[in-house]
Length: 403
Image 1: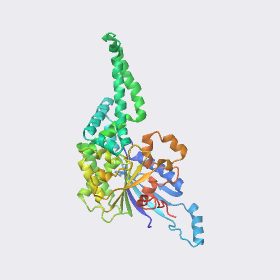
Image 2: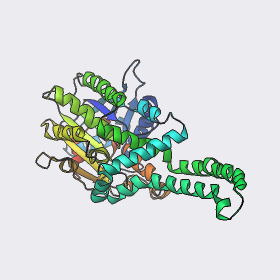
Image 3: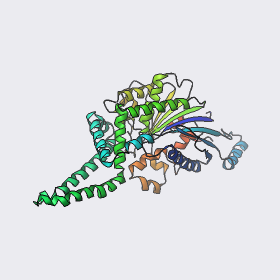
Image 4: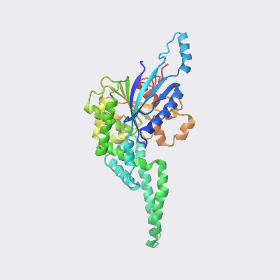
């Protein structure tokens, strides 16, 4: 198997309040963990000045001091090492959507709550919730949780406010019960709800509706701008092009790559392209009845002969559609289906580390793009910067490192 010497990576980040600089810093930390676990050398370059999306170069290579004795033993035994002195250079483009996240979180608390409940109603009316429970009931519970939690808090707030009426007190007593109720909501519930990132999840569902309906000019213009930037990045020559995406970023990626395929059906001709969706939330948007354009773009990607689609899923991650064929459910049962890769977070982390995070579902959901404690069948850094073609992750029998 020919090793990759030069790679271009377009990574569409998840729905997090992090810009490109912060995502690059996290990538560097995770890459260092991977290099230590697998025993290879790694250098993460500084962000390139003026790059949009933010880009940087990652260089990985054989750690000569540790590998050379093994190579010598193999040579003495008449065996080849298979890959002496390998080096891989990957240019990473962080296609973050922090601009949109910041915009959705910029309003006051009341406006964010109202926008969140409006998106909840829209998803229900368009059959999204029904689809969640039909295909992935745990994702359905993930959808309902922040809204049920907030609805319960609103109900308790109202109960406190009308307490004097229930106790047959004079209406004048509402002069203290009203402020008490408000204090409960602002100083007790809101800080408590931040443990579960409730308002952030409200914004996430507002974005899901926007990417499903495609009825917001600001979102649509931003997608067009990202498509132009991605098109420019694809002009660079490389042995392999990896388009990776995490969570909500998968819906963004499907739109952006779909836009390019609509305009230039032959854009990937002659290129080796891997589309890797990690903990994908495409169906979070695509199951809405109005998401016809997103579903059509999923079909374009699936039918593009140059693209190998790897859909990485995890049983212990409730925020993904486990064992659900995203292409078929999007209405393209006759198209080539994404190769489903099932991973286990507990295989990537030490027992103590896994025990520490397993009850935090958002943290488990982020593990797709974080560094490992142990050598495991999946490693985000090796997928995007390793020496082996990204397609090797489609097989559980393939080595992730040359040897």
